[in-house]
Length: 113
Length: 112
Image (tube, rainbow over all chains, first blue to last red):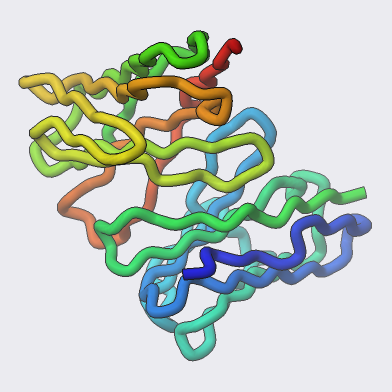
């Protein structure tokens, strides 16, 4: 069990650019979740996958955001045409089943210049 | 989603017990009470969860009121490493998503 891994840890980009983050969950975990956390706030749910199927998306996930989990393994979160308000920590978590504890990665911190 | 109420901050001395309260007066019968904590510059970490009965694990104990409208996370001997934001979360047992709805949590400061 190597834990949930996220890459990169930090990303600095100019407004309007596209960015992509990667999450490698704990192997054999069927559930994968994406959350966003701004300074001083608790994480907010964005979306989740059961294997390769994306089953729920928060209204926070605008059409500039897209997430994939090909083959039910790693996942990517892409933000197109980044805006200042996208600056946040993006957290990934995985769990074996719906009711099981979620294991979080240490996140990708996105800064928009 | 049922909401939880926690104090914004608490202080403790090292090696003393800490009781972190959480109110959840609108809890439903199938809601599980989960606790996570987040150390600085890290993702949240699962601590403990329960439904009706008190629970113990190597990290902490969870005491749940008989009416389930409140609960208390107990750290038996606080260490400096326990300084973190502690989140009390209700997870719907009837929901299949498993998503966690975080509040602002309680920031625990541990003094040496």
